[in-house]
Image 1 (cartoon, rainbow, N blue to C red):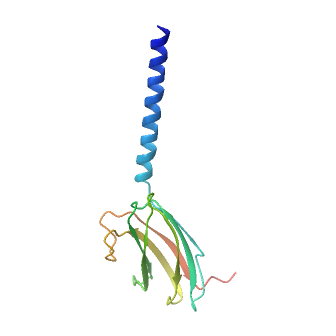
Image 2: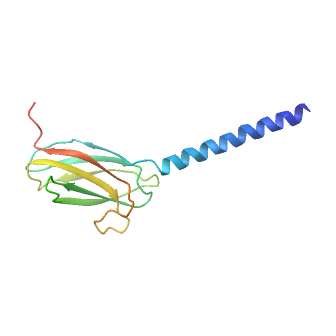
Image 3: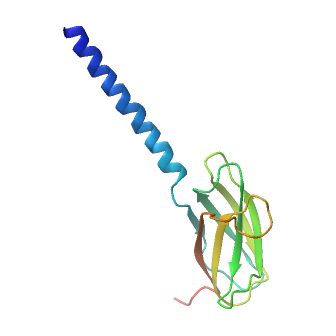
Length: 134
């Protein structure tokens, strides 16, 4: 009797463990993307490097980034390849940007056509040129 009860408890604990790991994996796949950039402002000329650390996009795919002005113009864009977790850590050089406030959008673009994929996960960060006076 004790052996059956022990086996039942072990089976239940094992099942909860498997379901717990599966739910964590599923939540990670469907998580919203996250992007950290540094710095969030810089000089107009000659430009500046922006370090981008992102995660939560399609694994082993392509993420497009676009600097968008308040007039919805896109003066600068590019692509990064994501790793097996849907992330990347890379640097881009922000040049040829006029003074102003920009939204730096990121989104899945698997076919590299400069159009975010239908239903793509996307997010943005704010970038200001030049840095505000302190």
